[in-house]
Length: 208
Image (cartoon, rainbow, N blue to C red; front, side):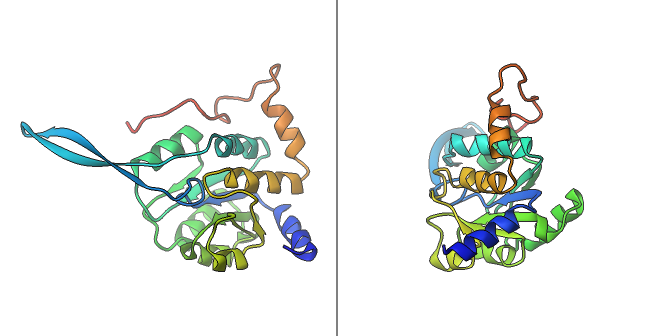
């Protein structure tokens, strides 16, 4: 990224109030594990395939940091997965959309719910399905191992790969541009003033 593009990306980042992430390839490394699990159905033993994904703890912390900076977070993904629902609850994400092949539709809903403009939304993606949103939002971010076409259209490319700290990179880039990164980091680790449970993550969750 050249110096001019860097300045432009930082200018865009200063306006961001909502960060939306793709899941596979952004919050994860793109790997999808299908694990056979034995189950009993009508007294018969059958095999059910359970989907599993791996998430990065650094990216989880990024959600708390963003929240401390007054930024709301969400995910939009084409796949539908119980693991995504569980992770979203664990992170207490404000916006969760699964089964979305055309991602501008939920983006418009988010704009209405959050009272923000496209200019105030950042989107982090890795593949061509993310391009319609990236082309219209205020700050388009691609992960380091995104498809080349996606990186070419991004305002900012993260140093780290999807599932390996890319979401954290995106949040820290925005908070730093807004002059909030150090303040949010210190607030996160302040023992005398712990952040409220509603803003923190890692308490676990279930699908009930």
